[in-house]
Image 1 (cartoon, rainbow, N blue to C red):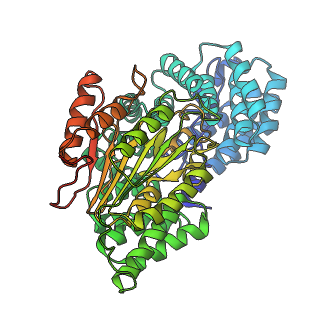
Image 2 (cartoon, rainbow, N blue to C red; image 1 turned 180 degrees about the vertical axis):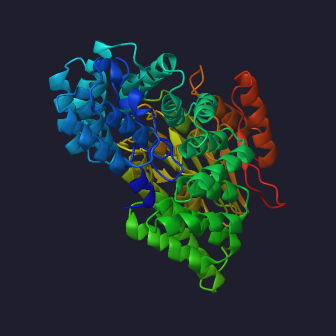
Length: 586
């Protein structure tokens, strides 16, 4: 079990089950026990107007619990309280709360049951019991308790907070946002409500809304190290990388055993082409969890950039031993092995193939588990026809490709590219960024959790590998930056999402040009017409004789930018040689 996952299993009553909302080194206590798990109807003393002899011991236990000081000491106080007043519902409530904090959830449930047997309207006990059910994996009973607590006292914030966390874990992100927003309205000083609201905004990629939610959480609880990490992730996706670095570093300062900010820093340093800094951060992630696959693949990329191919290959193979179907790892293994072979003289540079040009065109419209896209299949046929008319020797077309279909098509196309001067791939459909890597989404994909993305999708790296054997020009066009269709469906802790908005920035090898339909971190649309704005502009400019390819994509940029009222801005990555390339010569 990783350090991160171990910490993620220590939440406070009502707090998000994720780093930053649980008890840990420097971690917050979540909603105070009198708010998150305590009696929703008022303070404990109100349930014992004649002041029970157990009350001083309940008060001391409550203080120890709320201050995260000594849960075992709190239980000793509550043992004395139980002896003095065994029929006091508050004693059983706080024993349950303390057992929740000790992660003894199955032991906590009977205590809450006893509190409710003594006082059936003890709505705080109902909510706290719901959290215990949630923590043992019984979402049905948890939801029933949260609903009952809300029905009994709809003006209390904690049950909405707890139910919002539950909805998010079930993949119902809009219902989670509704409940968490209600929790912040009813409990404006309830820091975990803002914390979890930020987590869910990150999950649905509304990063501009996530940042102020985390700001408020940190104003109320400055040591919420998970909030710093969440805000860092949001800032990273908004392009505010300096702010992201500061947030990730502060999260680490508050909890040195927290892995996620190290991974976040590593990805930023990779984007900045600073492999040594990236390797240092991924080293920390791997030290804390040797089975951290994203960190192993990230460190491999750092080694690859710095030229240490043998270390890069070792890291990739270690990642694949843990996750054999990880598409980024598989693509990296093929690429690095090829580089090692070339470096050792095992493969010669590709010969000139006398102007042979080949292309693969993919259009995915009819997705099986999400709403279909209208244009990609039409866009693919339009682009394939234009490429054929430009004189390409071989144009393969794939419509509505499954993962196996796309993988097979890329394998065949790699052979085509090895016997060509030009290799061009165009893809239209859904694309997604996860853990700093870009993926094409097959029509048969089904994500039950974020971690399924690398094994269920096709890594962009595999597409780049497929064009790499061409001797002169390698071109990839991605009309794939549409809004993530799975954002409201993916299950798991809201804070754990590493899905970015749009696609991530890339740095392809020299001689390779990658054209995104819109800039990294942004989303494209299908447009209002028969074809997407990007496909229409590409086809229009491709048919113009004597238009050099670099200028072609500058004109595509201007066409799309104008036709979408400046809402979509295509972007190209990579550098070509000084040689000029034309789809159609003069």
